[in-house]
Length: 157
Image (cartoon, rainbow, N blue to C red; front, top):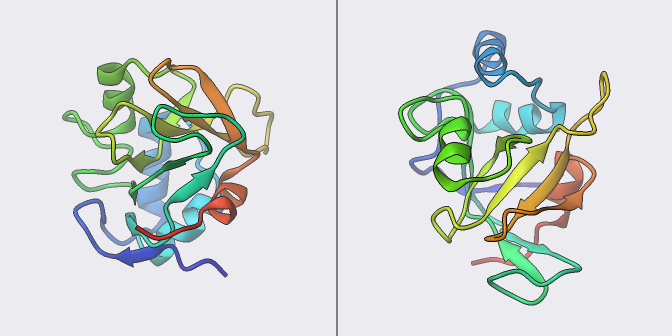
């Protein structure tokens, strides 16, 4: 089993329960993947222990990978469903990311790139793919779902 968190940080939200999940999904307009919710029930966002994701394409930051810093949770000031400039919808608007889903991570670049859940090809019951958005704002698929994405993460910073 993956142990994703290095410790609490400002991106750690309140304890997750069914009511918080329902509220977040209603605000976002998307059903959250079960693999993401499983992680949030253990710790609702925070610094990741493993942060490097290998790629088959170069990024603005490296030839063969990108780095994520903190997983964003739900609820709280820094949740993906929050308003006031810090939620996923706010980040999509502020940084010009494609409106294809949900921004899931705080990135070392401070917004120049992003990792998102991509709901464009989701059918009923399907989980969204995970895509990397670089400075060119083109979504590049890196995993078929969130669980696979967590399995790709390696390295320590």
